[in-house]
Every structure is written in C-alpha cells, then in structure tokens.
Length: 462
Image 1 (cartoon, rainbow, N blue to C red):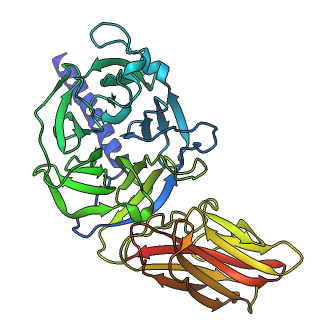
Image 2 (cartoon, rainbow, N blue to C red):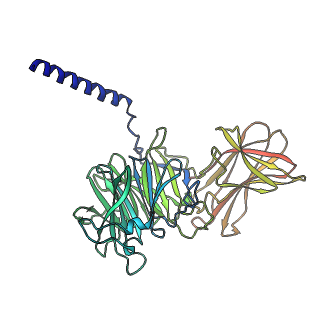
C-alpha cells in the first residue's frame, strides 16, 4: 500500500509540475517598464476623453485622482465635483462602470459605526490600488466647505467587481492630494505638498513624514510596475521619476508637460502598452478653465516615453487619422473626411471642395495641439498629395496670444503631385509660456473636387 501511495503521490506531483511548466510557457513576457535613461523623451500618443466618455452621455465633472487595476485592466478616475469614481478601459477610453456618491455616502465605518454621509464625499482627491490584497483606496480631503471631513474609503471585490465596503475618518489636517501603493514596501504612500508618508487602513495610522529633495506641490503618484521607481506629477505641471531605494530624483527626469497642453496635472499612472514596448504614462488634467466643448477638458493624456536624447516630444495626438479625425477640422470651402490609404498607415485625411466655385480649402488643428508654448524651436510637418499634379499647398504655423497674432506667420509650400511628399515649417515663439500655436495646411482657390490628402502630421520642439 505504501508503495502504491508513494507512486500515486509522485504521479500527482509530476502532473502538477507539468501543468505549471505549461502555464509558464504560455504566460506573457514580462513588461518592459520604463527606459533606463537620463535623456527621456515624451511623445503624446492620445487622449482619453471624459466629457463625455466615448459612446456615452456621462461626463466627469472634475479631475483629481487615478489608479490602475491590472486584475481588471482598468483605469480608475475620481473627481470632487461629481463625487464619483469611474472605471475606464485604458486602451479604448470606454467607460466600464460608475460608482456614484450614494455608494460612498452609504459606506459604514470600518469596525462598526454610522455611514459616511455627504460631508466625507465632497472632495475625492486620490486613489491607490493594493495589488497584493486586491483593494482600492480612495481619499477625500478638506475642500471646499468647512464641513468637509477627510476620509479614507476602501473598495473590495464583491461578485467580481470592486465595491465600496467601508471608510475610516482621517485627522482634520489630512488632505492627501496624491496616493499610490508601493510594491516593495507593501504599503500605501500618501502625499501633500512636499510631504510623503505611509498609511495603514486597518489601524487607520500614518507614518512619519519624509521628503524627496526637489519634489514639491505633489498632486499625483504611482509606482513603476516593479516598484523600483516612483512617478510624481506636481502643481508646476512637471513629471518626475524618483528612485525609490534612494529617494532621489533620477537624472533628467524633470519633464515639462505644458508643451503638450497639460494645464493642471492631477494624477499619473504607469500602464503597460498593448503590443509591448515601454510602459505608457497616463496624466489626468484637472484644468477647470477650458471650454466645456474642449475635448481636452478633464482628459487623460497618454504619453509614450523613450530613451533617445534628441528630436523633441511629439505633440500631435492624432497624427495619422487611423481611428478618426479628432483634433482636426476643415475650414474655408473644405469638408474633412477619413479615407483608406495613407502615407504611413491604413488611413489618411481628405479635404474636398463640395461646392461649385473655387475657394480656400483648409485643414486646421483644433483645438491647437500646442496650447501653451515653451522655449525652443517648433518644427511642424505634414505628408500630403493630390489626385493629380498642379495645385500648390501651403503649410502655415502661427503664434497667438489670445486672439491676437504675435509676429508674422511662418509658411512653406509644395506643388502637389499624386505621390506623397512632406512639407515642413519651423517657428521660434516670441513669447514662450503665454502663447499658442495654430497649424494649418491649405490650397488657395481650390476648384470643386478633392483638394488634397494629408497624413502623418508632426509637431516637435527642441
């Protein structure tokens, strides 16, 4: 019997090991994480629109905190005006679910007690996801009434979804504008101003404050997936990378977000890129003064980061018209459409004069991809072609302060042919930090019919 039992155990163990080996072979390769470089280069990949979320009539009413939940492949967003949390697909921007204020207000106190009520839900500021415990934490602060009570909420998994299950009251001085879970320390890190500290929900205790030299105005935190680095965004619209073991900013990782149009960086997330490559950086923008019709209002800016030292950051968020014509509009007599066949991809933009008389046929970036200029030289380019040779296309880059043109327009031109060719123009802003750039391509006095095709737009600054 003992021999048979031992043989059975060996067969079971062998089978288990075989299964584990098969799983290991099928498992995806490790994520690339962030590039190891002192000369990082950001490029804007796309926006995630929240007003409204794609395919819905639901809109975020503010932008504050973010968290990424790998178990669901979900990006979570919170804002104080809406008193709600939004679960979003980080790759498509599709809204998965909303947890509204009623769920937060109804949360019981951890360990027993009354419900949270409205005074604890009015200032949802930050989020942190504990991957080891599969728990999402949401922190509310002291804005914007005297009755606001700082609070930590806990969301745990119920029926497959994260749901609000309890709250803990925080000290009246607590106002955690940023939070993240540290994989290496297995604890939540919260931040405000220059100060960082640990927080433990079950005991409702905070550790002593500590600082990272050069880091202030902290509004968003997240750790790289291996826990080695802390990413932070600040009130100066800067993004930093901090080596967590030494608590020092990594050389070169003090990145200006304003050339991309970020006006109020509130949250940052490190999220794996589909198809491989370095992780992408998601920055939630809480700038309130944008028009309600501006697609960048409370948008999430998605950045690629590379280790190359030159070339500037690509500032155009929809350069190839592969999905839609977001960020572009037609002017003059033109109509704009997305058509098959492009220079560097499967699609391009087509400008047509659908009228019966000649007129200016224009493609314009709207809203302007460069919403706030930086010092340096901007280079804009566009690949263009016509149905036939003959027409002249002009590419124009102009600097504006409000509605006033600053200096003269910079213009380059090409004679269109049926083949793709690139046209390029450069401009050095006269008033960096206070102006915008307007880019447009046009064929003057275009006859009825197709005016031109456009693809692979680019704006960089160096």
